[in-house]
Length: 516
Image (cartoon, rainbow, N blue to C red; front, side, top):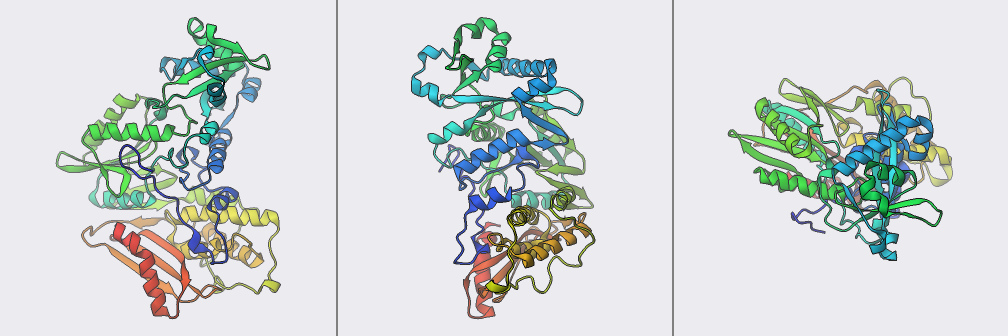
C-alpha cells in the first residue's frame, strides 16, 4: 500500500531459499518460535515486516512493553508496581498522566455521546512502571492497539525503517570522507505526531482516579462506573500514543514532512535516508523511528542540525558524539578513514543464552560435513527443548550475519535450512559455530569506501552441495575494504552443471546489484 509520500513499506525478508521445495516456509512461525533478536535486546528499535501475521505483531508489541530489560531497568505492570513501589509508584503514575495532560495527548470524552460500538472499539490503557538505576520510578502510559487490527488493513500501519544495507554503506562512505557523526534519540517522539483518525481510549480503576486528580475540573464529570463497579474515563486521542498500530507511521510522516520543509530529499532507494547540501557538502540523515544518525564533514553543521531537532521535538534529546556509537544494536567505531562494525556484546548474549555451556574455540565456523545429512533412519532428532533452542539461536545468528559477521554466513545459512526438524548432527554444527564465536567475539568488520566510482560485486556458486542437489550462492559487495553487503543462500532450483549454477547465482544477485 502507498502512503501520502509515495513510500512503499519495505517487504519482509524472504527466507524461502533456505528450504527445499517440499518444505513449506512459515515466516511468522519461523521468527515467532525463534524469538527473533530485537524483541528483548534494544526493544525500542524493533521492525516487524508487514508480511508477518498480525497476531504476531500484537504479540511482539506486548513482549516489548511487558518484558523489556535494558541496562537493568525493568518495566512492570501498574498493579504490581503500586504494590512494590507504594507512594513512589503512585507519584510516578500521576506525573506521567500530568505530562500527557499538559501535552494535550488526549481530551476527555463524554461517554453519553459514544455509541455502544464506539465504546467497544475504545482501546484499553496500560500503565507500566520502570525502576531506574538511579532509584527513581518512572511511569509510562501506552495504548493496547490490538483492537485496531480488526479495522486497520494489514500493512497499512507499517512504518518504513532504515535498511541494514543503507546503514553499512553510509558508514563506509562517512568513514572515508571523514564526516562528523552524531546519533540522537528523540524520547517521546511519537507524541509529536497528530492523530489523523478518531481513536478512543478508556482509563479504568486507579488510572481513572489519578487522571481526575490531575485536573478534577476537567475530568470528574465524565467518570462513569463499569459493569464491575470500576471507575471508567473515556478519552479521545489527539497525539500518536505508543501502542496504537499507526503511531510509528504517523511519526514517520511528520518527520519526513519536517525534513522536507528544511530542504532534505529522501533517497529514492531507501525512504529512511535523507540528504541535503549544506555549505557545499552533503548532510545525510538515516533514521529508524526515533533513532537518527546525522552525518556531515563540519561538526558545527551537525550541532546546528541537533539544535533544530531540539526546537521541534523538545530539548530532552539523548545525544552521542565522537568516534564510537551504538546504533541499532551495532557498535560503529570510526578511525583512520575506516569504520569497524562489531556486535561483541550481542554475540556473548547469544552464547550465554545457549542451554549448554560453550567453552574453548574452533578454527572455523563450519567443518567439512557442514552440508552433509544422514539418512532418515540414521538421524536422531532433538527433543523439544533443544529444537526450540536451536531455532532461536539460528535466528539470532542470522541477525548477526546480516550486520557484521560475514565469516559465519555460510554455516548459518546451512543451519537455517534445518530449523524445522534439527537432529544431533545439526546440534553439533551449531555448537561449532558458537565455539568459533566464543573465540572471536570481538572480531569486527572493517569497511571503507575508497573508490565510490567503482563498485565491485563478487558472486560465486558451489554446485549441488545440498542434500537435494541444489547449489549454494555467495555474494559480496566491496566499495574498498571489507564486504559492505554479504549474502549466502541456497539456490531455489536444481542445475545441471557448475556453470549453470553460477549463472543462477548471478541471476539471484542481480536485484541487489541493480539496487546499488
